[in-house]
Length: 170
Image 1 (cartoon, rainbow, N blue to C red):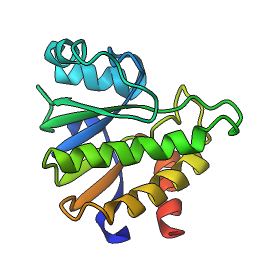
Image 2 (image 1 turned 180 degrees about the horizontal axis):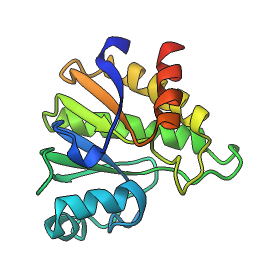
Image 3 (image 1 turned 180 degrees about the vertical axis):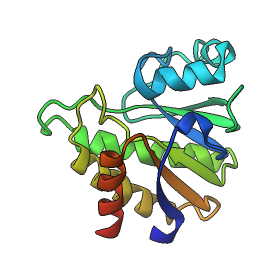
């Protein structure tokens, strides 16, 4: 499954994947970081659809249209806030990736682009997050042969290096 995972640098709002993943908050009503950037790029229709979804629990995911984005869909997943690693954070982060890939497959998405979930204002340690993400994606892709490519779209070189190292270690 490793051959179906790519690590790239870029702006996820410019991705041409079937679905991009939004590192959302539980309200799904926009926020800072990648969440705010996706809402801004997609336009007000995204917020209007998100208002109908009644939020989303940490580790779960919901799907919307992509509106003004190149991507057909946005899959929203609230990642865990890092406390100290003993409050289920690793399991919740893995659940985010599994939930997103399940929704992608159920909605006919062959290509999915992820940001680095929970490593910004939620303070999940980057190296641990990268290892969990890459391992979970690789394991989960075995269940979904219809998903042909998953990319981690990294905002900066430090993040890209962490994900590339995690993929190399698989």
